[in-house]
Length: 274
Ligand SMILES: O=C(O)C(=O)[C@H](O)CO
Ligand SMILES: [Mg+2]
Image (cartoon, rainbow, N blue to C red; front, side, top):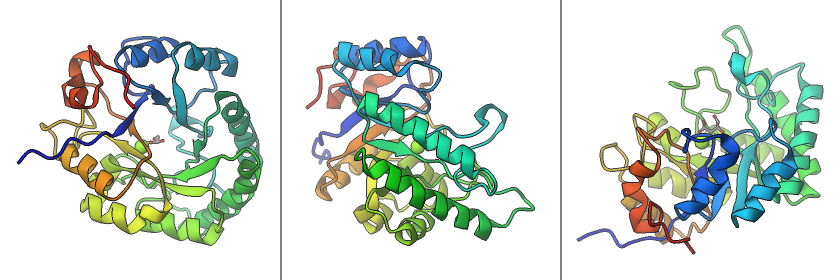
């Protein structure tokens, strides 16, 4: 029997899909195929008013972006857990919150950073907890949730937070209601599998979800390992009503690859969802 059709709230990740068009034109491209919400990595190369204008023009909700990650081009993946970078971290959060206010974005992913081979993970974790405690207080005034996302060790060797359990441990130690877990099914499958079980175990902390196919991080379709029809049905059964970020690299032209999303109203004839 076919899995009952769920109605996942899909958000377009504009850092990954529509690579064939300029970033600021991706908002129109997402709206044209039926998305009502967008997320991306870093908006800082653009004036926040430029982005706000596109969200308004195309009736899009901004659901997530990342705090500045340090020197991303040279391999840094966050500074929140890097000893000695505390001042830079605080300035990065102030900038991210300034963008979040204009973009009316309720979630910011705060990347933890990489632990060097000679580094002490305990010290890095200590710094991450201290920085997140400070940042949670800053974000609370603007009703912003700060997200922690476990990243898989194959793509992100040395990343400070590799499992949902490690994320939970940090969140519980920080003890702030606005620090939440970002559950990316791509990283979860690359790291541990048992996707819906681990989702259920951490659901009380989960504030955002992302998806992609495994192993290619391409379209989340039947050519890849994860059965997303079953995942969406499971999320619906568990009462997850949040956004699901489509954070995948299209194999070819983005719109040609939306067959997987057609049942959810996304595609060349996309009808606005919800
Ligand atoms: O890589 C991912 O899955 C993310 O969502 C991070 O925000 C960027 O690396
Ligand atoms: Mg992700």
